[in-house]
Image (cartoon, rainbow, N blue to C red; front, side, top):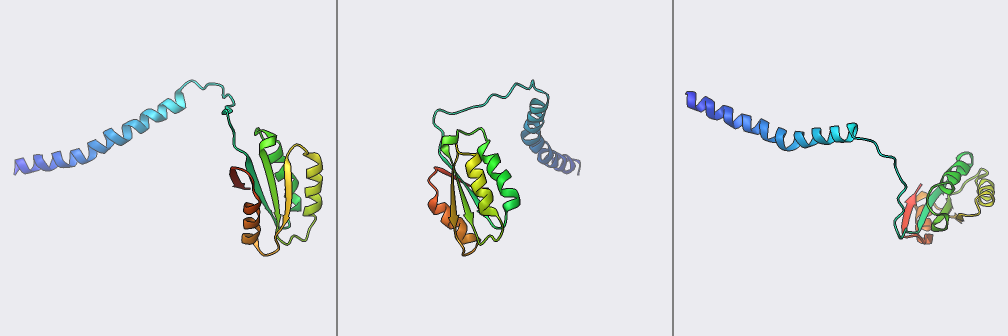
Length: 140
């Protein structure tokens, strides 16, 4: 009877101790290392060769926020000659095109393109994807 109790305790102790040692210990060490280590100043890293980016901005009556969206992309840290923005219109009835033209005049250092795709959101996104030239394509 006593031997079986000891065997059962050993079995369940192993099931509790092994995960704690192999899973919780590294997590606790990483937590303290991340939160209490000396915070170094972040330096911008620019790899030797950066890919060309295409940012797709689907537009449907978004004249109120379109300028701020294009401004945030244009003012990013990424090299401007590697950014391409495709604005894909999906049956907008507001002043989105006028806002786009204003942004195009204000941010001349970024390539912007306006596409009309009046057949739904999926068609608009696919039209923009087919028109993209960058190595990486983002949906904003």
